[in-house]
Length: 219
Figure 1 (cartoon, rainbow, N blue to C red):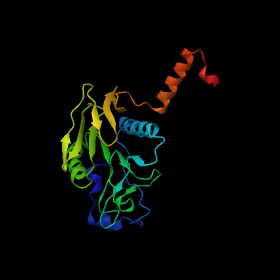
Figure 2: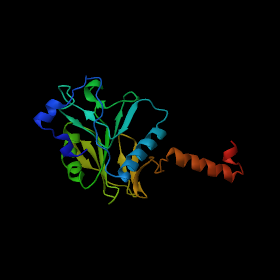
Figure 3: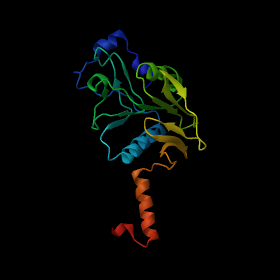
Figure 4: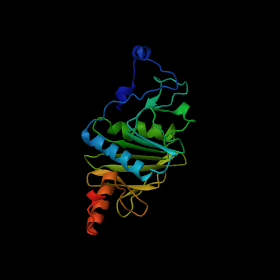
């Protein structure tokens, strides 16, 4: 979401419908490019596959976070490209409404940079996630230029993360590394192994079965 999309005139605010506090729908604009969509869906797919046996987290892509102290939809809201909340119920939501979620904000946020949003992602959003959301891990990534940066909250301020020998950055909140593989950002285990998509996992299993002279299509 661009900054311009979030700034509303007084007349526009009056015309917006304020939904009941338990029925707030997401209000995010479509993603800017196909590559942006591919990146966040890749993250969502991989994390849900990796944590398929866990029920204590919520991961979402391009979903509005409402955080008004006055419980108003039109007052304070933000739509990160990808975020994860820990120690919460895993279920389908229409949006993330802080006052309906025990005051919880995301533990992890990733923004996908673009020409129209990069300045805001590096500036105003970084300040918001640091000072208001108090989100421990904040990352941004540009799939076209491969710009990749991560921060961890230390004593209330974001400190830049240092890459390891593989140029991967550690997310303390997720317990995973993030690193570029091909053109996109991927998750890696603490041991440095790529976290696969379900499709990649199935392809590896099929290849292994063929090595054993077993046709996977017959199983």
